Image (spheres, rainbow, N blue to C red):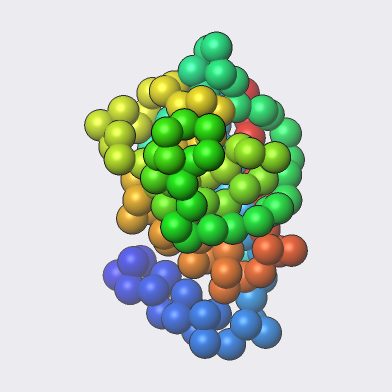
Length: 139
């Protein structure tokens, strides 16, 4: 029932952007989890992969700098980075093909998500607006 209510709420926001509120993507690096509250209510919780110890993911509160649904890495052999949301230079949340490693520190600094979840996050940010979105990365 909760999923149905969330889907109806999202459909309403996507149809009528004036109803859009705030969205946060809260990344807990110690637990490798992203929690996504929408208008203060937790809507999603997903496993992520943040940066390896040698390739840290920066901590802090960030806004959305840019978005690209079909991005490929210019640094790492044209690796696919679907549903990218850039928040700190070349650091982004994005989908990964390495879904078996979600829940572990494995990236070069980005926050990797299952591609389905990255798409949901991308569409939420589009619906709510980049200016109404915060990305909080915690140790």
